[in-house]
Image 1 (cartoon, rainbow, N blue to C red):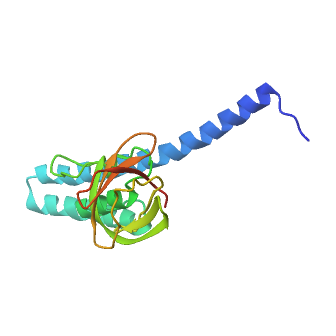
Image 2: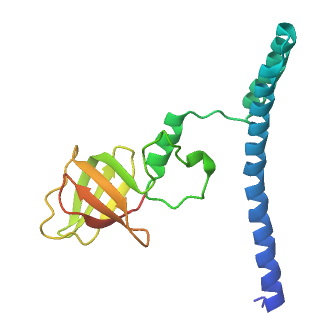
Image 3: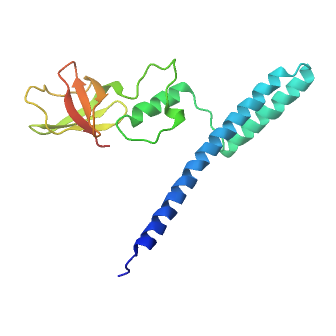
Length: 181
């Protein structure tokens, strides 16, 4: 058995942190590169001569298409972002600018309204159900007043604490639950 000294453990932690930092720098570079593409494309608008402006647009759009084909840049619309946020709701994810809403986007990252696709009772106090987004949730200490959970039921999740959520099914009083898959 190899024993690590405190200095060796610290070096291993620093090496791991450096690797994580490198992984975080790559997306930031891609995001900056994407912003450069847009800035260059917007700059073409200020060219007065039509032929020069068209040549600028052709050049910049060609560069964006090539980068997209190579997988370096991806254009994502608002609906893709909404769908991804709904699918990830309930999980702790890194703070990514691309997943943030804007002023036109009313959905909050703390509340999700959806429907139940399937449900089953595990014990007399435990339920497991799947939402329309294929997220699997579990309620482990359901009160006796909780009515049966059925496909098609409306459900509202509101962020609580410690990874738990208040789950309100068909307007019933909220119960505590957690996303498991």
